[in-house]
Image 1: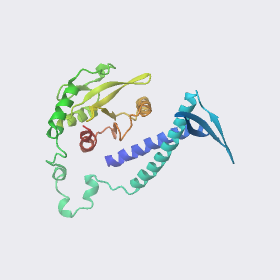
Image 2: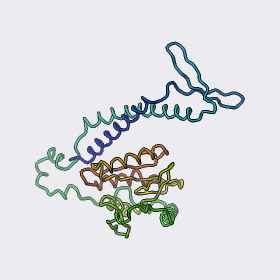
Image 3: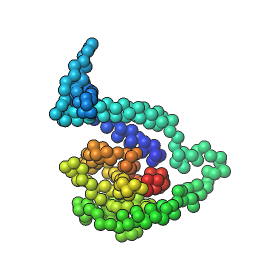
Image 4: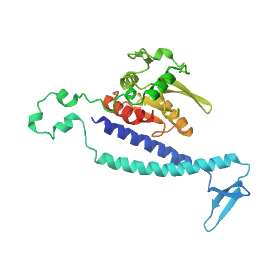
Length: 279
């Protein structure tokens, strides 16, 4: 089993699911698109109703909901284009993916290596990018102080936090326990289950970090996507995050268990390349 390939497969499925939902929403969208004109420094919005040979402009002055609906439509169109392109790219990459797991690699090795124990190949003293505390003492002290401040932590089902970390933090799953321990190893300050209030709903985020501009970014780990109710809540949260400009590759990291297993080298790579550079 290649956990990276499984992650890509899951990402592909999520992107296709999102594309399908966007296309369904587009079917119900208003016709035409938004145009704007400016007179004496004041902006006037119109709905461009396209016809076969001409178009009609409908004034949207004092109709902010109509403007918002057309803005949402434009986002859906552009995002669907990007998703379709990315789905093709990832799908093509999966066709050419090479398994990086030891069993698959041994099949290509010289026979001299075949009887050696697995730990000969897998153990390493290399620690990657190094701890954050080794990089910038001032920033580290600032982030430490931020993490130590009182914050609004989720009060949902505190009994569900059954897994202790080495520093006494109680978390809800072994996967979160592993992630927390790796963050400790890299000396990265974080807040666990900090509350976010978005629109009319409130959510907790698994791990919150303070960026170098004092902006916060987040890490969500989904561990039970095989459970229908859990998957529904996770996808609902992702939609609210998106509506509030909390999106992957910008200020949100999303990882998943694969067959109930969290991959530590993969988690370390995320910390080194996605978390530490933003601090």
